[in-house]
Structure formats: C-alpha cells, structure tokens
Image (cartoon, rainbow, N blue to C red):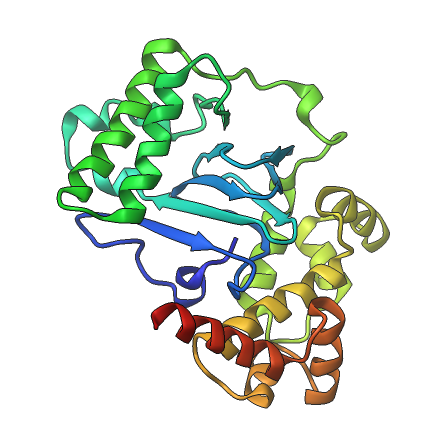
Amino acid sequence: MYHWYDFENIRRGTYHFPIEFYYVTESHPRYVMPYHWHLEIEIIRVTRGTFTITAEDTSYRLEANDILFIPSNAVHGGVPAADCIYECIVADLHGLLQRNAFFASCAELFSDSKKIMPLYRQAQKDTEVYTALTRLFTTMRDRNDGWQLLTIGCLFVFFGLTLESGRFEQTSSDTLHGSYTLAQFQKVFNLIRTRYAEPITLEDMACEANMSPNYFCQRFKEATHYSPIEYLIRYRIEYSKYLLCVKNLSVSEAAFLSGFNTCAYYIKVFKKFTGETPNKYKKAFFAQTSGREG
C-alpha cells in the first residue's frame, strides 16, 4: 500500500521514533493497496468490513478486529471491500533497535531466518498476543500521555511473547502459487513505482521479470489478479488521487504528472475505475476532510 510517505519518500515517524500510524477509510486517496514492499514491518488491523490481502504468496480475508503482521521486504497488496476501515502501523525496527547491542542480538525476528505467524484473531486462545497488538493500535491512535513509551512497550511485548511461545511458521511449498512467487515481480513493481509517469510497455515489464511477454502476462495476472497494463493504469490513477487531494493540483496537472497523455483519457479512465470524475472525487474528499476538522 502506498501511503503518503511512499510518494513523499520521507521517514516514517522520526529518527528516534521511526513508527507511524495510518487510519484508512474509503475516502482516503490511498484506500486500495497496490502490491509493494518496504524495509519496515507493517501491522494491519481491520476495524470494519473485510479486506482481502495477499502477503508473501498467501491470501488472507481479514474481517473486523483481525490483525495481520507483515515482515520487512515482504511483497503485499490487496483490495478492501466497500465501506471497509482499516489501520496500519509501519515501523522501522532495525532503525529503532540497531543502536542497542542487546536488541541487535534479536535481529533474527526481523529477518527472513524466522517468520512470525502473520494472522491474529480475537477468538484465538493466545489472548496475550492479541491484547498486546490491539493495545498497540489504541495507543498510537489516541496518543495520550506516554504513548511513545507504551507503543514501544507493546511492540516489545508482542515480540517477546512470540519468542516465548515459538509463534513461527514453517515455509511450505503448498503456500506458493505454482513455481513462482510475488517476489519475482519486485523489479516490475519497482519499475512502475519509479517510472509511472513515463511510457512503459508490456515488453518493458516482461524484461524486468526475465519472462516472455505472454508468459509474464499469464503469471502476473495469476499473482495480482490484474493484467500488467491494468495494474500500471491503476497505479497511475492511485497516484493521481494523491496529486489531487494532497498536493491540491488541478485535474490536468494530475493527469500529466501521473503518466496520462491526455486529460480527456485520464478523466475517462478515472471514472471507469472510481465511478466519478477526478474533479468530483477531489471535491468530495475536501468536503469530507473539512467536515472532520470542523
């Protein structure tokens, strides 16, 4: 999911507190989660509705109060159902802990050598872990006195209980989609993320994946549920929402800066994917934002 920070390329939180919280509703310009990865861990909690997300080649259907842990460098993405509300916590654990020798000795928790069990549900027997995670979200959302210390404390409790109870999963070949994984498309996702405003062809993307165009098309759609070109267009539309609502650019500026050749084509595609014109979408966003502030 590309939040504001992915487009701004800024640090999560601060240097001494590299942890950030995001509250995402349907009106959020970054509501849909394109496939991506980052160095930080991410923890997602659904508060309303359902959210289907794929992480490391396994699909999860998250319902209200479900929590998903995503390790660093894991390719993930998904689509929330209508009216879904979810929260995300993104944390640079390496940056937070690397300056302490003891915590550095626990680095395997944040690497590929051990995979923490990803899914946590309210009805599970291991209530200590679930309680620590829910408290983490409440703490970061409310930000009462002492919230930074409590945030770090909740994270430490989560990882400590993980070690104590051995909540690690075994990598199994039956979780993979055939003979490929989403990780094989990292270069393609990176190409789109860095060159979305430039002309990108199917051949360009297939070359990044080291596959023939036809084979790449087939495998990419099986992995992401979108054709490569549709995925590229959706990414451009999502980025244009950021330009419209965060940068407050005009429709024509958003169109050209997000990679569309003509404003008319941009408006047509935007309406196809969102059900409304860019201008109407922008007005609705600012109306809802000013309403919350009021």
